[in-house]
Image (cartoon, rainbow, N blue to C red; front, side, top):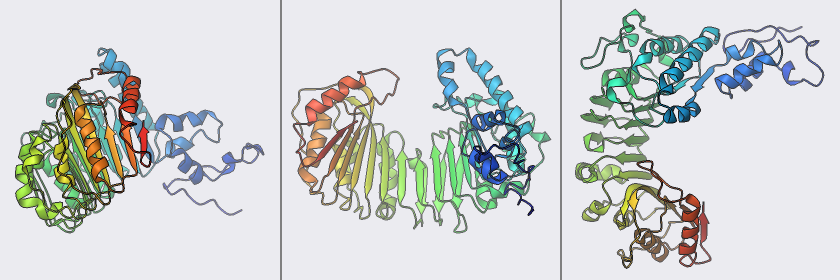
Length: 463
């Protein structure tokens, strides 16, 4: 009998005993590598649960190359009972440690930690990183957001151990008490393709080390790092395609030059220096106050704006500032997304100044974050008429039925020559977690308000 080939994960399990597999259980007769591949689509817990099926399945989950420790569902209970936070943290840490001791995979496609963890778990997370790098992890994610959705307070954040990469301790970065015990992994990190750090203190030196020493890094995401001050993404040899730097409040400089980056997302647009990025087609920018972003980008970014296909802006201070800027021709822009705070009945027609500069625009989306919205009896304003020859889809998220939203709908009905669909999502977009109105009431109000406005040849979808 021909010898069964080894698994792609560099291990070989015992052959399936055909006597142990009934005629109806054909799945268990599949080769080991196929069964492990199937298990890799499950969470760690789900894969481990298959061990109770039979002796045949008992060891298989230990060789799964995807370790996804996502336990954010439990955080809802923690949010209600804050005293449970430490108890759940200890339970989570024990679960990960126990699983890693049993894991026999020689290579990891994914290693994800997703739970409310902070500096109290520094020693354990350091060891998890050593484990992941020693198995040549390709996708590494540390998502340690408070409650699964908020940036941790800076004083409590976990700190990435720079010494793990053989780097010296960085000034201003908290020193781990255990990191000096970790051996630098000079070669094992080179397989990394994706890095995600949320509520993790990481320095520019560490990020640049990955960029220049990991030949396959294509995606880098950093949220809420208090120690990220300067970052340079420079050089045509870099493979990086997607960069996301969000809510890193200490950031002073973000320089991106001479690279083939494709998508960029940053809340520090006013700290941004962009030049010679010919492949950049999608930009997502935010910051406060928004006028500072425009003052920074407009004078030196017109050539870059003209090459974009997707533009997303987060104008938390309102859209009135857009009315004071003359935008360059956005010749290639196909999708435009605006996220704005919905204060009282503040007008959102400012976004039409960008829309008018995008002759190829096909889709526009407005996302409203509610902060005490109110409906008024004022007359609808009219924006400057500007025919839109290609716009087909309008999406309104957080629709409340204010006059400002109705006048925007009317703007598109009057100017979008080939408009096919209007999608309205009245579900509440909370800022301070207070409920404005039940979603069902908002849904019915949107239906009553818009059905008379939208002609029958345009599809109106109310979610």
